[in-house]
Image (cartoon, rainbow, N blue to C red):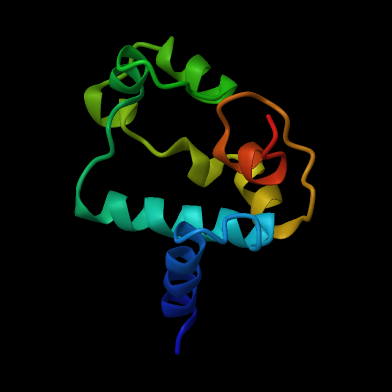
Length: 111
């Protein structure tokens, strides 16, 4: 079994009710893998549309939406270049505290 299959299997088990059994680092890696797979099939929903739909964006995504960007750049996955992703995937109890960051949510689920 390769790493991707293992991550998918763990994600499936986690979705069936074992939500808090997986370590935050593993949840972050699974999230990154799933988002990358979604991006392979086409552009992600743009940040402006995400905000308009009522979903929150992290502080970095919010700053990005204030710039005059093309639609293609508005749909860039900023998590790929964010230090929160790197910390989230490699450090237990990562010091990530800003709102609407999925990696912060994995490490501090009570927020």
